[in-house]
Image (tube, rainbow, N blue to C red; front, side):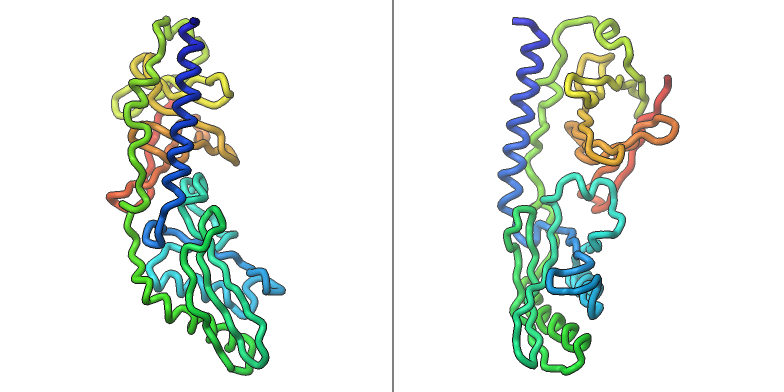
Length: 264
Protein backbone atom coordinates (compact mmCIF):
# COMPACT_ATOMS: atom_id res chain seq x y z
CA UNK A 1 0.00 0.00 0.00
CA UNK A 2 1.22 3.52 -0.78
CA UNK A 3 3.12 4.93 2.24
CA UNK A 4 1.41 8.33 1.98
CA UNK A 5 -2.01 6.63 2.02
CA UNK A 6 -1.05 4.67 5.14
CA UNK A 7 0.09 7.89 6.83
CA UNK A 8 -3.15 9.69 5.96
CA UNK A 9 -5.22 6.79 7.31
CA UNK A 10 -3.27 6.88 10.60
CA UNK A 11 -3.78 10.66 10.73
CA UNK A 12 -7.56 10.33 10.35
CA UNK A 13 -7.81 7.56 12.97
CA UNK A 14 -5.77 9.59 15.48
CA UNK A 15 -7.95 12.68 15.03
CA UNK A 16 -11.14 10.66 15.50
CA UNK A 17 -9.80 9.10 18.72
CA UNK A 18 -8.65 12.48 20.09
CA UNK A 19 -11.95 14.19 19.36
CA UNK A 20 -14.03 11.38 20.86
CA UNK A 21 -11.92 11.25 24.02
CA UNK A 22 -11.97 15.02 24.40
CA UNK A 23 -15.76 15.03 24.05
CA UNK A 24 -16.24 12.29 26.63
CA UNK A 25 -14.04 14.03 29.19
CA UNK A 26 -15.93 17.29 28.61
CA UNK A 27 -19.20 15.78 29.83
CA UNK A 28 -18.17 15.00 33.42
CA UNK A 29 -17.03 18.36 34.75
CA UNK A 30 -18.20 19.74 38.08
CA UNK A 31 -18.67 23.42 38.90
CA UNK A 32 -15.10 23.69 40.20
CA UNK A 33 -13.78 22.61 36.80
CA UNK A 34 -14.92 25.87 35.20
CA UNK A 35 -12.96 29.09 35.45
CA UNK A 36 -15.00 31.24 33.04
CA UNK A 37 -18.64 32.27 32.79
CA UNK A 38 -20.27 34.14 29.90
CA UNK A 39 -23.19 36.41 30.82
CA UNK A 40 -25.57 37.52 28.04
CA UNK A 41 -26.43 41.19 27.76
CA UNK A 42 -30.11 40.22 27.57
CA UNK A 43 -31.93 37.31 29.19
CA UNK A 44 -35.03 35.83 27.55
CA UNK A 45 -37.53 37.60 29.82
CA UNK A 46 -35.93 41.04 29.36
CA UNK A 47 -37.29 43.49 26.80
CA UNK A 48 -33.96 45.30 26.36
CA UNK A 49 -30.25 44.71 27.04
CA UNK A 50 -29.24 44.95 30.69
CA UNK A 51 -32.77 45.81 31.76
CA UNK A 52 -32.88 46.76 35.46
CA UNK A 53 -29.03 46.57 35.36
CA UNK A 54 -29.53 42.87 36.03
CA UNK A 55 -26.91 41.52 33.63
CA UNK A 56 -24.09 43.68 34.94
CA UNK A 57 -25.13 42.81 38.48
CA UNK A 58 -24.93 39.10 37.59
CA UNK A 59 -21.40 39.67 36.34
CA UNK A 60 -20.39 41.42 39.57
CA UNK A 61 -21.92 38.71 41.75
CA UNK A 62 -20.18 35.95 39.78
CA UNK A 63 -16.84 37.74 40.13
CA UNK A 64 -17.46 37.94 43.86
CA UNK A 65 -17.77 34.15 43.83
CA UNK A 66 -14.35 33.84 42.17
CA UNK A 67 -15.23 33.30 38.50
CA UNK A 68 -13.63 35.09 35.56
CA UNK A 69 -16.59 36.62 33.79
CA UNK A 70 -17.19 38.01 30.30
CA UNK A 71 -20.29 39.55 28.78
CA UNK A 72 -21.29 37.79 25.57
CA UNK A 73 -20.55 40.92 23.49
CA UNK A 74 -17.23 41.58 25.21
CA UNK A 75 -13.89 40.96 23.53
CA UNK A 76 -12.31 37.79 24.88
CA UNK A 77 -8.83 36.25 24.68
CA UNK A 78 -8.28 34.45 21.38
CA UNK A 79 -7.85 31.07 23.06
CA UNK A 80 -11.12 31.50 24.99
CA UNK A 81 -13.47 30.73 22.15
CA UNK A 82 -11.76 27.69 20.69
CA UNK A 83 -13.55 25.23 22.95
CA UNK A 84 -17.03 26.33 24.04
CA UNK A 85 -17.09 23.48 26.56
CA UNK A 86 -14.45 25.14 28.72
CA UNK A 87 -16.81 27.86 29.96
CA UNK A 88 -20.29 28.13 31.47
CA UNK A 89 -23.21 30.22 30.25
CA UNK A 90 -25.30 32.18 32.74
CA UNK A 91 -29.07 32.35 32.67
CA UNK A 92 -31.81 33.70 34.91
CA UNK A 93 -35.20 32.02 35.15
CA UNK A 94 -38.11 34.22 36.16
CA UNK A 95 -41.24 32.81 37.78
CA UNK A 96 -44.38 34.82 37.25
CA UNK A 97 -45.77 35.92 40.60
CA UNK A 98 -48.18 38.57 41.83
CA UNK A 99 -46.58 41.47 43.73
CA UNK A 100 -43.30 39.59 44.11
CA UNK A 101 -40.21 39.05 41.96
CA UNK A 102 -38.90 35.48 41.88
CA UNK A 103 -35.63 34.66 40.14
CA UNK A 104 -33.44 31.60 39.92
CA UNK A 105 -29.85 31.78 38.62
CA UNK A 106 -28.44 28.84 36.64
CA UNK A 107 -25.12 27.97 35.00
CA UNK A 108 -25.25 25.85 31.86
CA UNK A 109 -22.53 23.87 30.08
CA UNK A 110 -21.99 23.52 26.33
CA UNK A 111 -24.62 20.75 26.17
CA UNK A 112 -27.18 23.08 27.76
CA UNK A 113 -27.17 20.94 30.90
CA UNK A 114 -27.46 22.66 34.27
CA UNK A 115 -24.16 22.53 36.16
CA UNK A 116 -25.38 24.67 39.05
CA UNK A 117 -28.69 26.18 40.10
CA UNK A 118 -29.32 28.56 42.99
CA UNK A 119 -32.25 28.59 45.33
CA UNK A 120 -35.05 30.89 44.26
CA UNK A 121 -34.50 34.51 45.16
CA UNK A 122 -37.56 36.51 46.22
CA UNK A 123 -38.21 40.23 46.60
CA UNK A 124 -41.37 42.16 47.45
CA UNK A 125 -40.01 45.64 46.75
CA UNK A 126 -42.36 47.74 44.62
CA UNK A 127 -39.73 49.44 42.46
CA UNK A 128 -38.99 47.13 39.50
CA UNK A 129 -35.24 47.73 39.31
CA UNK A 130 -34.75 47.42 43.05
CA UNK A 131 -36.96 44.34 43.17
CA UNK A 132 -35.08 42.48 40.41
CA UNK A 133 -31.72 43.37 41.91
CA UNK A 134 -32.87 42.35 45.37
CA UNK A 135 -34.22 39.01 44.10
CA UNK A 136 -30.98 38.19 42.28
CA UNK A 137 -28.88 39.03 45.32
CA UNK A 138 -31.19 36.85 47.40
CA UNK A 139 -30.72 33.96 44.95
CA UNK A 140 -26.95 34.34 45.17
CA UNK A 141 -27.09 33.93 48.95
CA UNK A 142 -27.36 30.19 48.36
CA UNK A 143 -24.25 30.26 46.14
CA UNK A 144 -22.05 30.18 49.23
CA UNK A 145 -23.10 26.57 49.84
CA UNK A 146 -21.47 25.56 46.54
CA UNK A 147 -18.03 26.33 48.00
CA UNK A 148 -16.79 27.20 44.52
CA UNK A 149 -13.04 27.13 44.01
CA UNK A 150 -11.54 26.66 40.56
CA UNK A 151 -9.54 23.43 40.32
CA UNK A 152 -7.63 23.08 37.06
CA UNK A 153 -6.97 19.40 37.73
CA UNK A 154 -10.68 18.74 37.25
CA UNK A 155 -10.55 20.52 33.92
CA UNK A 156 -7.49 18.69 32.66
CA UNK A 157 -7.60 15.72 30.36
CA UNK A 158 -4.92 13.14 29.75
CA UNK A 159 -2.18 14.19 27.37
CA UNK A 160 -4.11 12.94 24.37
CA UNK A 161 -1.41 14.16 22.03
CA UNK A 162 1.35 12.35 23.91
CA UNK A 163 3.37 10.37 21.41
CA UNK A 164 1.66 12.13 18.53
CA UNK A 165 4.94 13.16 16.93
CA UNK A 166 6.18 9.58 17.00
CA UNK A 167 2.99 8.23 15.46
CA UNK A 168 2.95 10.95 12.83
CA UNK A 169 6.48 10.48 11.68
CA UNK A 170 6.58 11.20 7.97
CA UNK A 171 7.10 8.17 5.69
CA UNK A 172 10.48 7.84 4.03
CA UNK A 173 10.71 10.54 1.40
CA UNK A 174 12.70 13.58 0.42
CA UNK A 175 11.07 16.45 2.38
CA UNK A 176 12.82 19.11 0.29
CA UNK A 177 11.19 17.73 -2.85
CA UNK A 178 7.86 17.02 -1.16
CA UNK A 179 7.39 20.60 0.09
CA UNK A 180 8.85 23.00 -2.46
CA UNK A 181 6.48 25.81 -1.34
CA UNK A 182 7.16 25.52 2.39
CA UNK A 183 7.56 28.59 4.60
CA UNK A 184 10.40 28.47 7.12
CA UNK A 185 10.04 29.68 10.72
CA UNK A 186 12.39 29.80 13.69
CA UNK A 187 11.63 29.41 17.38
CA UNK A 188 13.90 28.51 20.29
CA UNK A 189 16.88 28.01 18.01
CA UNK A 190 15.03 25.41 15.94
CA UNK A 191 13.73 25.68 12.38
CA UNK A 192 10.20 24.69 11.39
CA UNK A 193 8.48 24.25 8.05
CA UNK A 194 4.91 25.44 7.58
CA UNK A 195 3.18 23.45 4.84
CA UNK A 196 -0.37 23.13 3.56
CA UNK A 197 -1.88 19.71 4.16
CA UNK A 198 -4.46 17.80 2.14
CA UNK A 199 -7.40 19.35 4.04
CA UNK A 200 -6.28 22.90 3.27
CA UNK A 201 -5.07 23.54 6.82
CA UNK A 202 -1.44 23.72 7.97
CA UNK A 203 1.13 21.33 9.41
CA UNK A 204 4.14 22.71 11.27
CA UNK A 205 7.03 20.32 10.66
CA UNK A 206 10.27 19.97 12.58
CA UNK A 207 13.44 17.90 12.02
CA UNK A 208 13.77 19.22 8.47
CA UNK A 209 10.26 18.17 7.56
CA UNK A 210 10.42 14.66 9.02
CA UNK A 211 8.18 15.16 12.08
CA UNK A 212 4.76 16.75 12.41
CA UNK A 213 5.34 19.15 15.33
CA UNK A 214 1.89 20.77 15.32
CA UNK A 215 -1.33 21.11 13.38
CA UNK A 216 -3.15 24.36 12.63
CA UNK A 217 -6.84 24.03 11.83
CA UNK A 218 -8.79 27.02 10.53
CA UNK A 219 -11.15 28.58 13.07
CA UNK A 220 -12.55 32.04 12.23
CA UNK A 221 -11.46 35.63 11.61
CA UNK A 222 -8.03 34.50 10.45
CA UNK A 223 -7.35 32.44 13.58
CA UNK A 224 -6.40 28.79 13.90
CA UNK A 225 -6.64 26.00 16.46
CA UNK A 226 -3.05 25.09 17.36
CA UNK A 227 -2.40 21.55 18.62
CA UNK A 228 0.99 20.08 19.50
CA UNK A 229 2.36 17.65 22.09
CA UNK A 230 2.96 20.43 24.62
CA UNK A 231 0.66 23.28 23.56
CA UNK A 232 -3.03 23.48 22.74
CA UNK A 233 -4.26 26.97 21.99
CA UNK A 234 -4.94 29.51 19.27
CA UNK A 235 -2.77 30.94 16.53
CA UNK A 236 -2.74 33.69 13.92
CA UNK A 237 -0.30 35.36 11.53
CA UNK A 238 0.78 38.94 12.23
CA UNK A 239 1.39 41.64 9.61
CA UNK A 240 4.98 40.42 9.09
CA UNK A 241 3.87 36.83 8.58
CA UNK A 242 5.14 35.60 11.95
CA UNK A 243 3.13 32.80 13.53
CA UNK A 244 1.74 33.97 16.89
CA UNK A 245 0.45 31.37 19.34
CA UNK A 246 -1.64 31.98 22.47
CA UNK A 247 -2.30 29.28 25.05
CA UNK A 248 -3.32 28.91 28.68
CA UNK A 249 -0.42 28.12 31.01
CA UNK A 250 -2.14 26.20 33.79
CA UNK A 251 0.69 26.54 36.31
CA UNK A 252 0.66 30.34 35.98
CA UNK A 253 -3.08 30.51 35.33
CA UNK A 254 -2.66 33.05 32.55
CA UNK A 255 -2.48 33.38 28.77
CA UNK A 256 1.02 32.94 27.33
CA UNK A 257 2.28 34.08 23.91
CA UNK A 258 5.01 32.60 21.72
CA UNK A 259 6.19 33.64 18.27
CA UNK A 260 7.55 31.58 15.42
CA UNK A 261 9.58 34.08 13.39
CA UNK A 262 9.22 33.88 9.61
CA UNK A 263 12.66 33.91 8.03
CA UNK A 264 11.89 33.66 4.32
